[in-house]
Length: 60
Image (cartoon, rainbow, N blue to C red; front, side, top):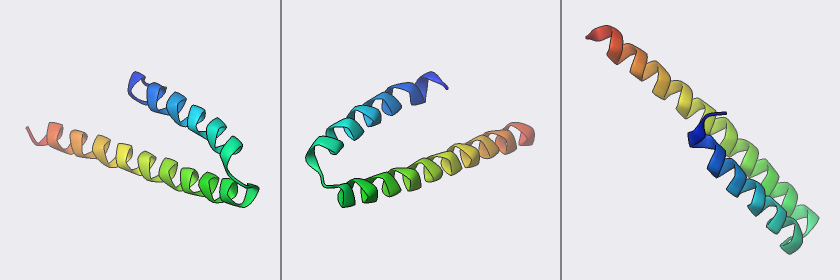
């Protein structure tokens, strides 16, 4: 894992622990689903960013 994603992941992990204490199981399930969606979108963003850098680099 890169240094850029380590800190947010640790923070998210801490938030998940806090969420388990504050919210019902139903809300926890919704939060977990949203977190999963965020993870997928973040991976897509990283992929697109990488593709863009590759395209810009090869155009020069």
